[in-house]
Length: 54
Image 1 (cartoon, rainbow, N blue to C red):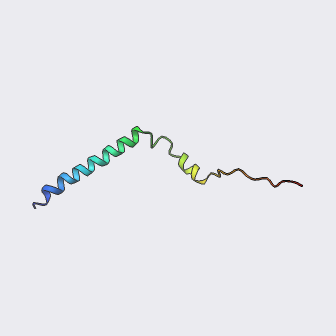
Image 2: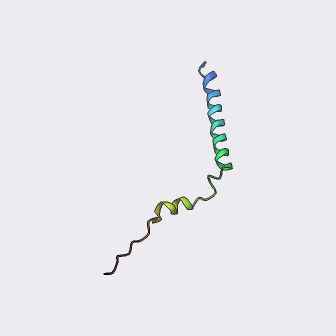
Image 3: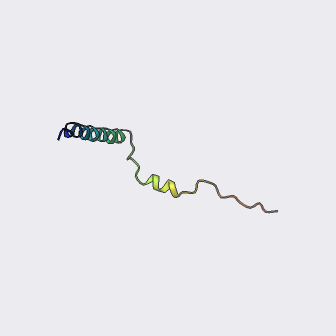
């Protein structure tokens, strides 16, 4: 039972750390464009090369 003295504050600290990290990511705009990352993953960034006609 003595281990609860360490585990409960540790759990609360980790939960608080996760909450602070989530709020920081919200403030910095990590969730502003949810669909853009998916489209960038499949977008073809290289231009199509045309075969030169002789």
